[in-house]
Length: 133
View 1 (cartoon, rainbow, N blue to C red):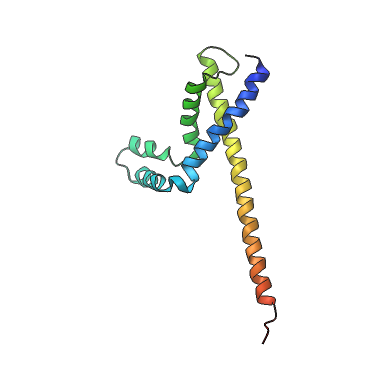
View 2 (tube, one colour):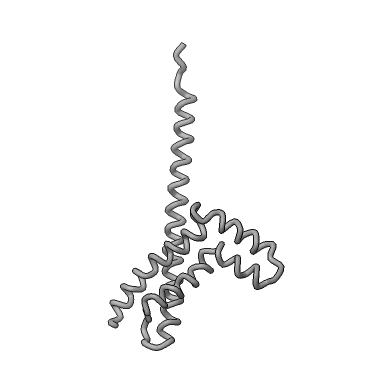
């Protein structure tokens, strides 16, 4: 595969990896299983148990496993056609997916901040309006 095509696929495949990792580790739809995993990651009896359940609460950790699944599904290799291509592509995909998730988190945080500022302005405006008697 030509290097430009490989790079195109790198940035394209990182999108669903980031989407799955973010959804499982942050969104409301997986809140109950995530809370269970948080509890088990803190209260587990063994180190292995605690680390296993922690991976479902950390988007960075979880993105490695999602990446492995996508590599198996797509047979994507970066730079080399043997097993080292899988290794390179795996870490590159995790890196790009986490960059996407960081950007998404910043954008989302900015949106929440703007909504809060708007609510504060609305409350301030309501309080400063003269009341009709």
